[in-house]
Image (cartoon, rainbow, N blue to C red; front, top):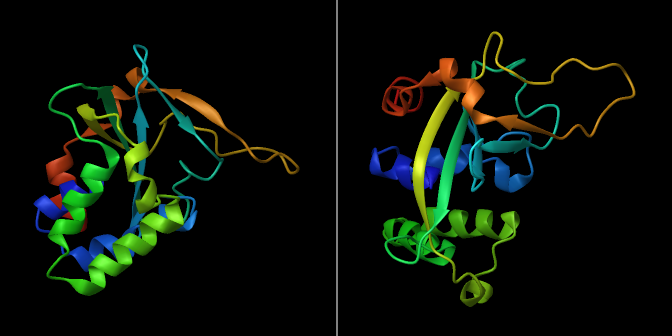
Amino acid sequence: WWIAQLLEKNIPATKILSSWKGCERSYHDFDFEGHVVEVKTTMTKEPRKVTINNERQLNPKGLLSLHLLVLSAIRSAKGGLSLPEMVESINSKFETLPGCYIKFNQCLQKAGYIHSHADDYKDTFTISKNELFAVKDDFPRITNFPDGIGDIKYSLTVSVLKKFLINTENYISDRISS
């Protein structure tokens, strides 16, 4: 979904794909030369929660900026997209860019998406909300822990993040487009 949004904003495909680090099992999903976006999707009812999978995902140390993009998805019988439909939509944008087409599909494979299993992904979804939060100051997160503690996984309630909400369009034009 994030890749599709960036393509719609005319961010160069090569820039998007080179920033996609989540498929490589990196700590963060996208890194635009130090401006990092961690993407989380939730289908939970209120209170909406996202799972933070390790102690480094929301640690901005060494980064120019860190943002959390929360996508709230709902299963939809009509009007939504399945995962294979989303993949195909993005692939169609790369048809005239063979290098990007190849890179995108390599990244999908690294992330565990297998084209031959596309028929198994029948459910369709709609993004009901997309919210971008600046991870800074007193943003709730676990970053300090004693030696010997690791593999930290925790839930974060989205409703407590309201004061960190920023405009996605502005973020894209200020941090990614430039």
